[in-house]
Length: 359
Image 1 (cartoon, rainbow, N blue to C red):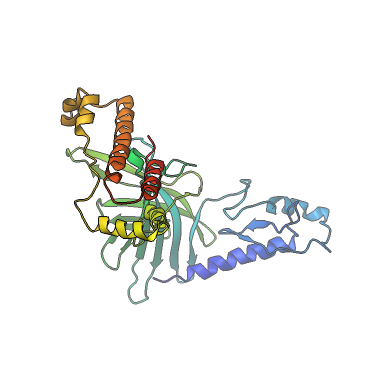
Image 2: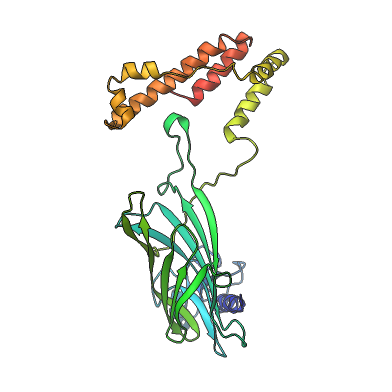
C-alpha cells in the first residue's frame, strides 16, 4: 500500500501549528493553544509565559478563531468541512487514509457493539497497473458496558468483559472487493467478503483544494437468525467523536481471582499447605454443591421452569440466585469440616469463600 499521503497530512498539521505560533495563539491560562490545520489540529509547543509580545488589534480576529481547541478540532464550527480522509496529488494520484467509528443499527435498536474502521486506499498502485488497491482493518468491541459503567459481577459472581478483536481485509487477497470507484467525483464503494456476514459500504467525499472531506457514508448487511428470519443491519458513523473506556482482559496462566487464593494458601502454615496439596490430588475429595432438592422445595413450579413452560420473573431469578449462593457457602462449610485442615485454616478459607459469594 502506498502511504505517501501520510507525511503530507502530518506536514500540513505542523504548518498549522507554526501559523498558530506566529499569531501568539495562547490560551488564557498561559498554556500553548492549538489550531486546526487543514486535516487535524496539532498541539503547539509550550512557550514560556515571560516575554510574550502583546497581541495587536489587527490580529485579534485571527486569534479569536485560533484559540482553545482540542486534538479533535475546533470548539466552534466556523468553517468545519467534515472529516478529512485523504489527499489528491499530481498524476493524478489519490490516497485515502480514513479512520472512523461504526455503529451497527438493527431495526432502529441502539448498538451493543462498536467498530473502528481504518481504510487505506491508493490509485494507481503502480503506473503499470493503474488500479485501486485498498485495505480495511476493523477493530471490534462486543459486550460493551453502558457509558460510564464498568463490568459488574453477574449471576454467582461471574464477570463478562468486553471482547476485542480485529479483522483485516484487502483487495490483494480477495477479502475486499471494489464495486464502484470514481476518484474525480469522490465515490468509493466496496464489498467485504470475509467474516460471518458479507457487508457493503459506500463513501462519498468532496474536494477542498487537494484534500478529501467525507460527505456521506452508507453501508450494512443482511443478518439471518437461527429461525431463518432476515433483518437489515445499517452501518452508521456516530455524530460525534467519543472515547470508549473498554477494560480488556489480559489472559495469563492463571485466572485473576486465583491470585488472591494463591496468596491465602501461601499464608497457611506448612502443615496446612501439605494437607491442601493432598486434598487437591484427590479428585473425589470435593464439596457437594448439588442442591436440586432445595431448589425444588423453594420453587414448586420448578419442573415448568426447567422445561421452559414458565418464564421466571425478576424476583424469582433474584430469589434463585440468593438460594444458590447460600447453598454453596453451606456446602463449603460442611466439606471443610471433613478435611484434616486446622481450625484456623478452615476459618480463613470459609471467610474467603463467603466474601466472594455474598448472599
